[in-house]
Amino acid sequence: MALTAADVGRLAELARVHLTPVELEHLAPQLDVILDAVASVSEVAGADVPPTSHALPLTNVFRPDVVTPSLPVADVLAGAPATEDDRFRVPRILGEES
Amino acid sequence: MNLLRMTAAGLGEAMAAGVVSAREVTQAHLDQIEAVDSRVAAFLCRDGERALATAAAIDERRAAGEHLGPLAGVPLAMKDIFTYRGLPTTAGSRILEGWHPPYDSTTTTRLLDAGLVILGKTNLDEFAMGSSTENSGYQVTHNPWDLTRIPGGSGGGSAAALAAFEAPLAVGTDTGGSIRQPASVTGTVGVKPTYGGTSRYGVVAMASSLDTPGPCARTVLDAALLHEVIGGWDPRDSTSINAPVPPVVAAARRADVAGLRIGVVREFGGEGYAPGVERRFTEALAVLEGLGAEIVEVSCPHFDYALGAYYLIMPSEVSSNLARFDAMRYGLRVGDDGTRSTEEVMSLTRGTGFGAEVKRRIIIGTYALSSGYYDAYYGSAQKVRTLIKRDFDAAFEAVDVLVSPSTPTAAFRIGERADDPLAMYKADLCTIPSNMAGNCAISVPCGLADGLPVGLQVMAPPLADDRLYLVGAALENALAGRWGGLLLDTLAESPGGAWLGVAGEDGR
Image (cartoon, rainbow over all chains, first blue to last red; front, top):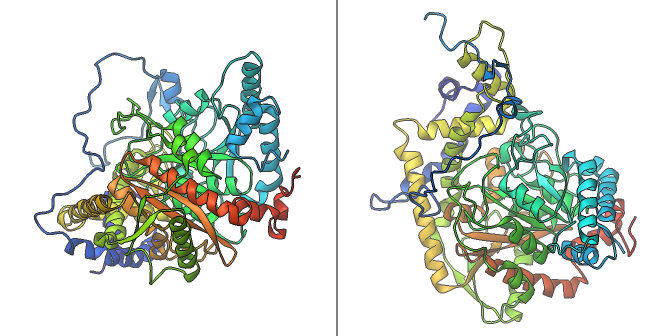
C-alpha cells in the first residue's frame, strides 16, 4: 500500500491539522513505512478471537449522584484564548457560503 | 553528609531524626539544579520559592511534634504532564505554552499531602510521544552518563534529573515504556504500576487505555515508598482499581527471591539486541539464580506483534484524545483574524502547535479508525491485544514473574534516530506488552555496556506489584555488593561524572 501526499492531505483535513506541502511530502513515505511495519497485525488473530479495548474488565462504574462544586468560572476562563461575558469567544462557526 | 547522594528513605530518616532540615535538603537540590541543569536540561521550570516554603512548613510541623510520613520533606521532580496549580503544564507541547491548570492531579494532591517538596516540572517528549525526549517542543534533555546521548523518553527529564542528582525522586507516566526505558538508559529505577493502580486524573492524556502514572527513583525501596504515596483508588478516575495498594514497601525490604519462579521471555533477545545488553542480562539471571530463584524459559509468541498492535491502538486513542486541543477553550490559537472560521482556526492552530511526531500519530490514528480500514487495523490490533493478554496469563500460570532486558540497546546518540520513526519505536519493544495487557513492570539497573547503563525488566501479574519490588530489591542488593553501591555511585565517583560535583562524603 502506498500513501500519497494527497491521501495524507485528506487525512490531515479530517483530523483538522493543517500541513504544509513540505510536511505532506515528508510525512507520506514515513507513514507508509510505519503502516507497512504494522500490516502483519491484521494476519495474526482469527475471527474467533474477541477484541480487547481495555486492560481491565471494568464495566458500569457508578458513584453516588451528589452535587459537588464546580471550578470557579474565572479559573476556567483564565486559560482561554479569548473570552466575552463569562464565556469562551470563538471564531464564526459557519462557512462563507452559509 | 552528602545530601545529594542520599536515598529518599535515608533523607526521610535523617530529617525525622533532626540531623538535617527539609529546608537544607531542598536548598541543596535547588543548588544542584542551578549548577548542572544548563548541561542536562532536565527541568522545564523550577519552583524554588514555593519548594523552600513547603520545606519550611514541614520543618515547623516536625518541630511541633507532628508525626509525618517517611517521605515528608523529600524533594521530587515532576514530569510536566501532571497538573499542579501555580506552575504551567505544557506536556512538552507548544500548543499548551503558558497554560496554567485550574486544578491539581490526584498524584499532585497525594504528593503534597505526604509532604513531598516539588522542585519543578521536567521535560518530556511532546504529549509523552517518544523514546528520547527529542520530541519536546522546548528543549532536548541530555543523559548524565554521556551528554551526547538521549536520556530516554518520554520521561527523559525525570530520569535525567535523578541521574544528575538534582532530585532523589520523580514521577512519570508510562504508556509504552516512558518510565521504564528512561530508567534503563540512565541507570535509575522506574516502575509502571498495574493499570488502574495509579490515578490518571489530572494527567494530560495520550492513550487512555494504556497511560499509567508511576514512581521513578534511584533505589527500589525509594520507588516503593513513592508508589505507596501515589497509588490507590481514586473515585475521580473511573478506570482506577478499588483495591488496596499491594505491599510494595514490605516487599522491597524483604528482597528475597528464594524459591521464586522467574520466566525468561524467549522472544526478547537475538536480532536487534546489543550484545552488551544481552551479556548484562544473562549475568543478572545468574545472580538471581544464585539467590535461590528458579530460572525457566517461557515463550510468549504474540509479543512479536505487540509493537505493531501498539502502533495502531495508541495512535487511534491519540487522534481521539488530542481532539481536545481545538484552540477554543485553552492553549494556543492561531489565525483568528475575524475572517477565518472556527474550523480554519482549529486546523491552523493544530498545524502550528503540534510537532512532527504528534502529527504523525494523529494521522496514523485517523487512518486506522477511518471507515473501510477500521476492522483491518484497529479491530485487528484489539484482537492481538487479547492474544498478548492470553500469553501473559499462560506464562503466569507457570512462573511468578517474567524478565527481559528493559530495552534492546543502551542510550543512543542524540539525533541518531530523529528522522527514523520506526527505529525510535523499537526502543519500546520489551516494555509495550505490559501496557497492552495492563500488568505491572519495573526496570532496575543491571550493569554497564560500553560505559552506558543497562536495565533489567521484571513483569508481574496485575495487582502483584509487590513481586516487582521483591525481585528488583534482591537484584539491587546483590549487585550493590559487587559494585560497592548503586550503579549511579560509579558515575558519581568517576572522572566522567566529576562535573556533577557529588563525589565523596561531602560532595560539592
